[in-house]
Length: 161
Image (cartoon, rainbow, N blue to C red):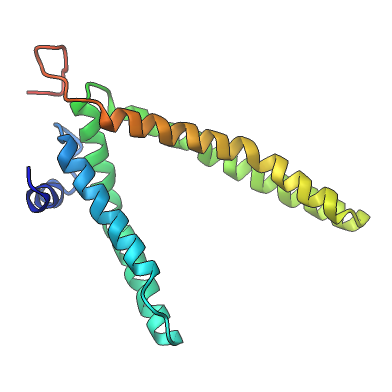
């Protein structure tokens, strides 16, 4: 599958969470999204109007590709022989990040009242460690799954038809 065919396939199956997506389809779309994100970061922002246009385009691209990104990832999980429900693992680091932010804010407020700025910074760092580790663990898990070879129907993949 060529780069252009892969991108067309992703957008043709915009919200299709059933079926499979090959490795080239998933990774070419990931490459395109990453390239657009990196390029948009390096556009010279000479004034406020250019900055606001670039930020608007970044938000539009991110929101516009949220559903196809989730769909192609779900189909890629199916191609590897797993359920797309494994994507729900992303909820765990999300909850942990939320809890660490709340913990950090409470600790920061209390320690700043006491005048312990160094201790407040340490509390924020310590509260962030579990969230960062969980985020990395889920990210590594997803990378491993999306790099697995296709699993055929004969090999027991119920999603491959």
